Image 1 (cartoon, rainbow, N blue to C red):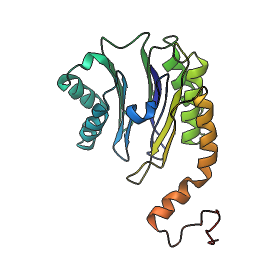
Image 2: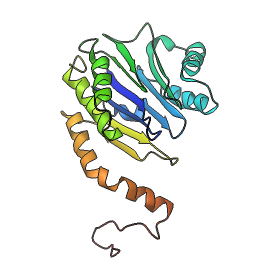
Image 3: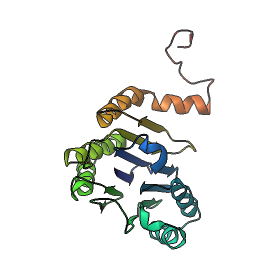
Image 4: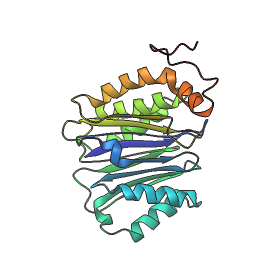
Length: 226
């Protein structure tokens, strides 16, 4: 019920994930990133704990493949899960259990990997990775969104999607971008509009957290800072 792309930016070390599904609030369950550590997508019949455990294993220094193998070996009902793991070196891997739903596929590229289940066709992940790689040189988030749009254009899910998410971590302990459309008839389009609004303020929000005394004002009524 989901298609996603997870990547590590080779220029900045940021990790990012874009995701969409026919289910509501897909990003709340499936997206797991940690700055300077890695990324784990837990999909299909989702167990969010796998994302948390996977990040802890990556933080201990395990590679993407070692984390995948550890999760597969130790997890009850693993046949129902679809996993993606990207480590701090940009190495990626995936797992799709025997009970993964519908047409499902994964496709890896340089520092990026896409996966999906209940897909309209098995070429959706490859189209996402191709769009990501084809937009090299563009800002990281724009590349992620290009991949998500390409997945939809290739057919996306077998049915209509209703939720989408964009998540990026960089050099602070919290996500610098965590945007979600939890229920909509056009969630991917709406996600792009959210990014247009949020993008100019990303660094300002980081500055406000680090040192609010020198951070720019909010530009809203009641805030008289320059």
